[in-house]
Image (cartoon, rainbow, N blue to C red; front, side):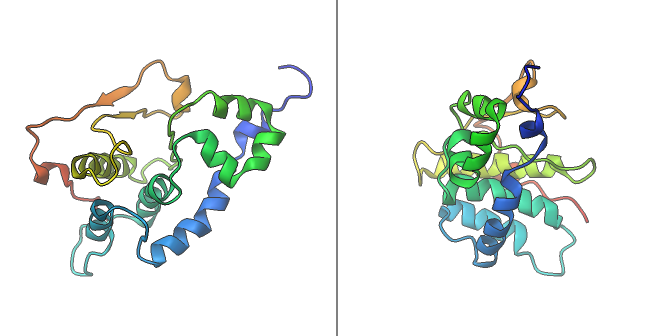
Length: 183
């Protein structure tokens, strides 16, 4: 590695400390500023009565809310926009981070979750959110019936291939509304 350039920019997470209080306040206010479809899904997933055993863990809820918040409330369309809005200083101080962020011209949401915390349920919920918003047409062009997922411990740009989930017209709605993990 050339002198004077540090990998510290990759090791530190700049966005979570900024996003956490914003997403927390937004969640407590009832998820304002989202599509009706998103609001319905968030209410279904997280406003369940105490009698049901089917509930998301808090870390799963916060991961789902964070992606929806960035996409719908902040209207972020690229990784660069997200950094410029929430952590512009990080881009100025870490050239490798800036170069990577500028090379990605699409939304890239990465969720760092520990083993056993229910990443599969989070991804399933985000697929459902993306799919039903694409069907509703509330914000044309914001959602896709195709969503690229990369599951690995490395950042997605280091993977050799991505798993592509495509729309399946024959899949009934009740199958897509998967039940959350049991706490």
